[in-house]
Structure formats: C-alpha cells, structure tokens
Length: 84
Image 1: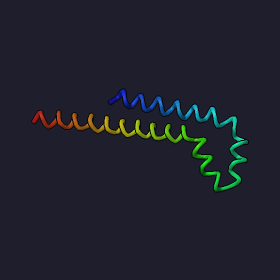
Image 2: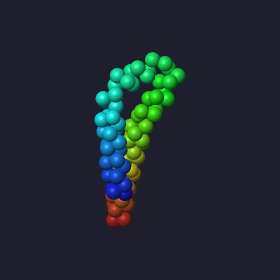
Image 3: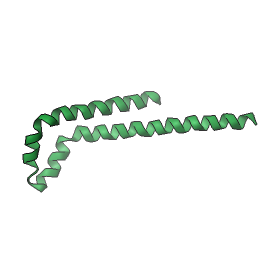
Image 4: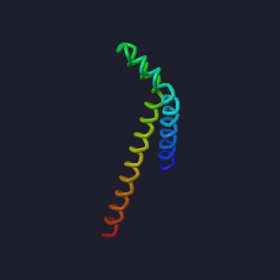
C-alpha cells in the first residue's frame, strides 16, 4: 500500500508542476479568454486538466495514508488485546 501512496504522490506532484510550467507563460492569454463567462469555464477546465487530475491523485495519496495509519492502529490494538 505504501508503494501505491508514493506512486499517487509522485504522479500528482508531477502533474501539478507540469501544469504550472505550462500555465505561467500563458497568463496573458488566459486573462483574455476569461472575459466571456460562457467560454471561461470551459477554457479553465481544458487548460487545467492536468491540475485537476493531479489534485485527485494527491487526494488519493492522502486517503491511502489514512488507511495505512488506521491499519497500524488496528494492529497495535489487536496486539494489546491478544496479550490479555
């Protein structure tokens, strides 16, 4: 499960960084596209698709980390209960 956490974490960070490297040079183009509200939402979703996927992967890594902690706590509780 730790391998899956690290894969999610690395892929999420890479996608977020790639999105930043693509978006920062195009800030003026993005500002000009946001003048029309109807086109703005679609343009933002299209240009930040990598960011959206990256955030989902980072959230997945967070959930896997919570699951790992929960299993560690459960095994610790089971160890104390087994000694009785």
